[in-house]
Figure (cartoon, rainbow, N blue to C red):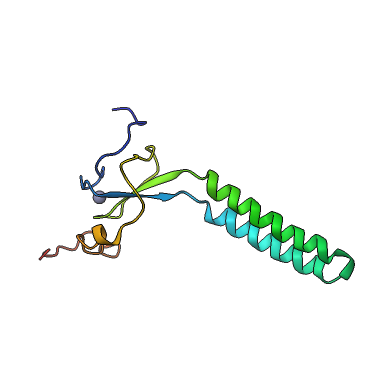
Length: 119
Ligand SMILES: [Zn+2]
């Protein structure tokens, strides 16, 4: 089976209800913001460099936006919340939908050996 095939059901539980999320690198985004804030505070301490500090903030916000818009997508299963980063996002799947999510009970917290009755 080729890895580039788009998913139409969850590889773990075979559920057909999937949604997509942006694969935004949160640590990178946080590092850019923290670096921008530190740089701004350092530059803002001197009135001559205050404008440069503002431009650092504006440039960093633009950089985070570019990273966000160029990030790929990954697929998440509504039933088991398994994340798939290996296949390209399927165009038939959309963002998280609360109405679809209501069909599935929230997944158990990391203890998969528990048995429960789904009523
Ligand atoms: Zn699943």
